[in-house]
Length: 140
Image (cartoon, rainbow, N blue to C red; front, side, top):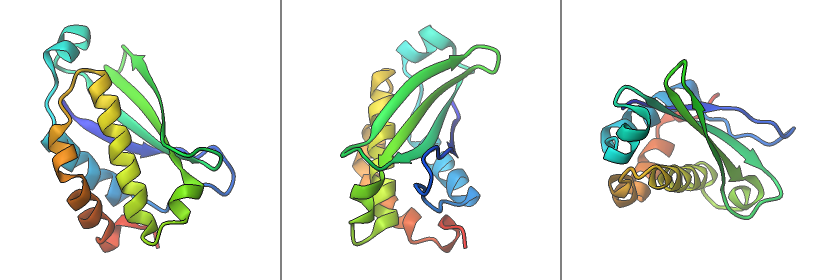
């Protein structure tokens, strides 16, 4: 099961400068850490993929997860994770905080599909730190 990440920001002035390389790195890391559950395979099949759309909102205090949306033609299950923009902007390490909120949202979405997210949870802090410290993570 391949996991993909993309970004779509709908609120003016509310976004994070994550690069295309960031999306690929995160996709590779998360795909490596999880496997489809029997429940997921039974419901969708073993050739389906997951897509997480990253977004943000000002007036929320915690991440909001929307979905899943199911696209049978492309064999794709999608979630949108809205990050709490104002809360994250107050943090001392903004990008690392945003990645932590994102990964927590990914874990919640995976759990809702019966997919074991313990591999991500065990490495959450180190993943957020290593990915945020890469120069290619942020658009220049």
